[in-house]
Length: 321
Image (tube, rainbow, N blue to C red; front, side, top):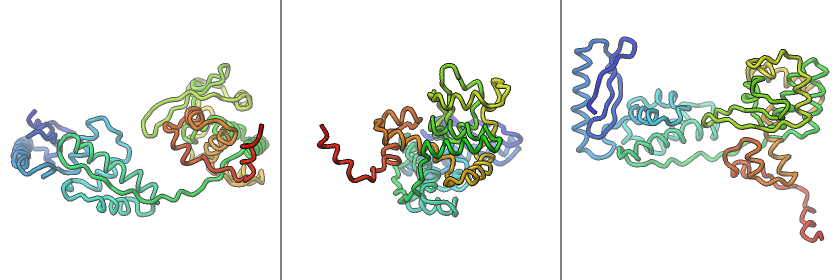
């Protein structure tokens, strides 16, 4: 359909399809007459570029707009759109994307550059390629050397929970037990409301928000159920189970409890790490661990958590009868 004008606040914007290309943008003016002229210029240029080959005149702003219109994930895109603005897609090269990662997040590490710049930028451009607007792009990821995390053990978790109870922080102790028992991330656990907990059925409905919104029902073990039942709470359906707003409010008390318990200072994420590591070492297959712990892809569990058992004598089991 041809371009049409619409107002957002006082400024006129345009959207529509011209010469097979979906266009959307701002005229930058509140004057309808000027906006009409600008709209006509955009249409004329779009028809001119139709004959210049795929990608001619296509901007990153248009690419991101089309990507969002297709209801793709908007995660990280606002920062990218602000950086690229109206940069022509035909000028984008794999190395310019890698350079953009360093410029947008100068203090970040390789995993962040890959996740928040390279992957979404490449996905948006390649979506435009599927529409026939431009060629596909392939960007080499940065080599990642993730810091090895120490997994929490059941002994560590119990020691932490006991100390938290002694310190008058039963909610923090229960949070630790819950994350170890369900592989919930600290943000997911902090968002739990009592409506999400079914103590009689020993289940918890956990809301996940990355990379897309979905839910999973996790089993909670008797030890965790007991800790939840002992929490001082009115247990209104919309009350937070653990009483913490998020990871920021957990960090300080968490580190203090670990110090007083005289146990290694592990992060809350180490409970999720401990879930996977403990289940694997107890002989459960990777697919089961992934499903019970809320990982979409079993290969992620295999790649991240399936560390080799250090005891060399485990091969004796080959000749056990």
